[in-house]
Image (cartoon, rainbow, N blue to C red; front, side, top):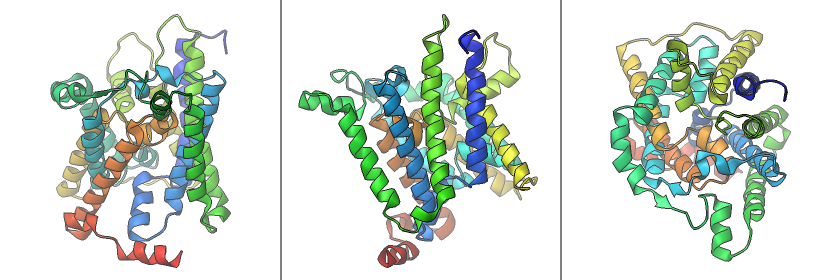
Length: 368
């Protein structure tokens, strides 16, 4: 590995990680919106527990790598001292609504494209282009005063890591303690369900997906330390890398793809293999102009919202969470609220239904 050019090896390792991610997620129907929807409307939390397990697994794996000096998450943008709280809230809420309009997130769209969904291709194109516009284009002009200029600084702590912030407040190193407490709390909630403890495929899915994210931190850290050229330390996101993938396809800049682009390509390939294996490939397109319009709007909200919040359900909910970034829980709560409002509008025809407890979920909670 060390004899190969790290810059060339970076996208290849991204493809490798993506293949595992796409195959496992597509084979086991891993989807953030579906998990939330079943939890809210059917009272079934098994998919949500799998999603939380992926986040906790990523947290445990990443923090162990950091503790042994094998991952440098401090060099990632997630732990920048500047916490853009308005972007986390506004962007997360926009992303959640977009996710509801489309029926999945950017990661889910890649998985759906692997099964032949042309709607997903439309959504990914819109996500990528709107993300580029929000990051480097005209929408970025609005982002600066709305998000960047209102950021809260955690310079005294050195980063926006929850561990670093608490360590500064109490005058002692608490990074490991914070990670342990959060991980244990998550594991207790996940496995307190006796029925879930018997669902080995779902448990395996959560652990593998979390491990792939931890692998990304190790891989990019390892290569960055051995390269004369700059290599971005990252682990997984499905907003800006989608735009970068589009740019790599349509333009020649003389630069090789990064890990994120490789991850997108690998995830798509893994999803195709899983769909073929499950005999689950079928061409799908929008039924009418109204559905197409909903997907275009949803993709735009996810692209812009994902840039404002600096990540998607995977990018913040799993990758950002694995670094203990304070932005991760803020973004995910905002995304969940946006998704709930969006679903209330689409499913129940009333936005205010989002703030009422669903009867199915209430009945399930009482049964447990």
